[in-house]
Length: 280
Image 1 (cartoon, rainbow, N blue to C red):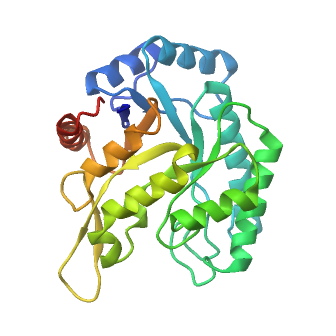
Image 2: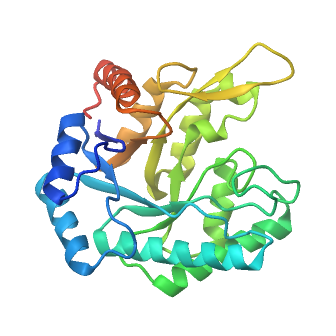
């Protein structure tokens, strides 16, 4: 059995690499979100990368949250530039990946649109990912797309198809199983869903998100994101499966309102991992 590196955001706006490391240690994290912006100079990037190495902290991901498929040309162009700068930063600082969603052709950058799961959009995603990777040409980091419920990639098989179509070694996988739980069937069988994702995508997974999800009992179907431990995601299976892949695998908590909620969520994940014999 391997291990998993639990991580999350740090609070209090640490202003130096040393303060950043101390904040991560105080939270008990061994993985971190990238602490600098793409316009950081080489000295700052080098300082944070060195501090992370010295403290045995993995920089899991650089977020490039934007809409490269926007129907608005200016928004699309800005998003592509953000993704390229994000991937370059990941390469410079030694992050495991740069992550974004595929994007939407609708009004909301991360929302559902009837056009987003079409063949035309699939080809647009392939072209976009290729453009980002081919311009940056990373050698140690990867560009990844977060799994999503209503846009590509919305399943393990959709991700496999994208990996083959993009056909670039620097294209990796970002696994967020909660985002794939888009029906009662997947909700009640989410352990099988996680196993399928790891079985089919395992060697390509660069980082994972830690959330939870709950199925409400009101019609028609209501699925809500909640903090880890408050929903139905099978964390025993989740931590066991990703631990078997990679001793450096990050499991990054997100979307919680404050440090107290992150501490509670981390406590739940740590308790499950300890029960399963998975070091965090």
